[in-house]
Length: 400
Image (tube, rainbow, N blue to C red; front, side, top):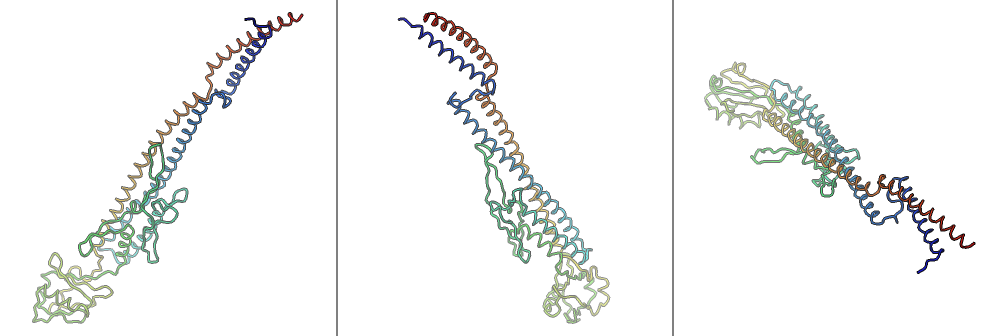
């Protein structure tokens, strides 16, 4: 089979053009640093690169979510740390108020401070994050979760739902938390011995109320002092017993309480067997007369002593301490969630680095290989140009 000079010429020209095109493409790769210049260069590789880019964007979104959570957790932690400090102060005030030597006026001053602390805690319970969303209302983030009515009664109007945020392909973390979980109340035995749940702000309201409640006046009479009286007793102008009655302690308590409607005082015996006489709310003990022992009152320990209900104060000390413990538990939980979020971010950053390295291996040119290939293409191009020049001369000679 014979090949004409024209066919040699055409083939040589085509080879030279292809080699020149390859060299130009390699030169462009070296100039841009990119292995793929046009989508048509390698559609399979282009598809792989597209998948890698989407995976990188997804990991970056996960990290943005983690950063948002860490910022929110820090805001929550700050609010609850302040709440913890306030409750420590409230417990200190409860201990101070339990001192029997504190006057009614002093307790009213303490009550004013407690009211201020309660208002501060309400503001903290309604704290919002940097985006203006309520942090302790569950999934209800647009309105305040804790609302006080005209009488100061605080009710929770959030919910217990949690909004979850993706932080990885297979993991979600809670964005918000229920206010009832954080600002949880205490349990209390009522007068019937039944356990009742008392909410967070009611505990503080009861503490405040116990401080401003009208104080009672107690007269405590020991059994040996009672023995000095032969039986005749008058309270607030009402005769309770006659001299000839000679009532026992138990009988005397009954006689006093039978006249409460007229005397406005009540009586009981304490654990030590003392007679305890105290005024009813809104009334005073104007006079108590042991007719046959007129000097007895001056000898009675605790005579006409304004007193705070020690049981209420002890309850407040315990319950406020429990509220503080609940806040401390919530703080510990947030700290654990911060650690989880930060650990997840480290994992995500490692994944992002690996994905970017993989993408770089697909997108970026291998300079050493490209330079070697470019030199080879230049050598082939020079050879093709030399061959083409000789063919061109041969063809021209034949025409002569």
